[in-house]
Image (cartoon, rainbow, N blue to C red; front, side):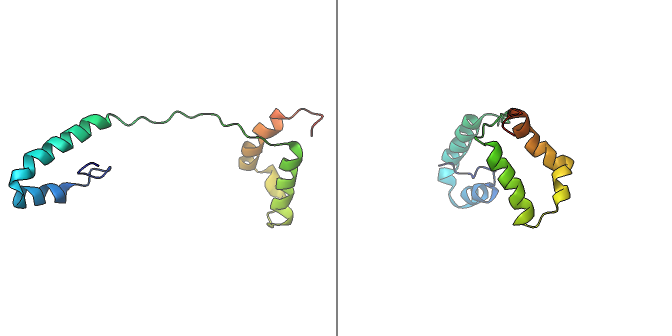
Length: 98
């Protein structure tokens, strides 16, 4: 395990070692440098597509539950944000499935 936590919050530890454990300071410095060298740059994960198994019936039932069980207004079905969520599903179904 690293002498520092992932977010590099090790200032107090380094100061403590400098003041109270001078014989271990060089070892700690070496461990910190090795740890930092091994980390490399953090890579931003690329956005990826997800695949979901969803049949038209299940999608319809989920929309009905939003209104009937959870009390969401029916007009929500026309909201742009809601359409952004369900449109990929709708476009993947054939006309006969709907």
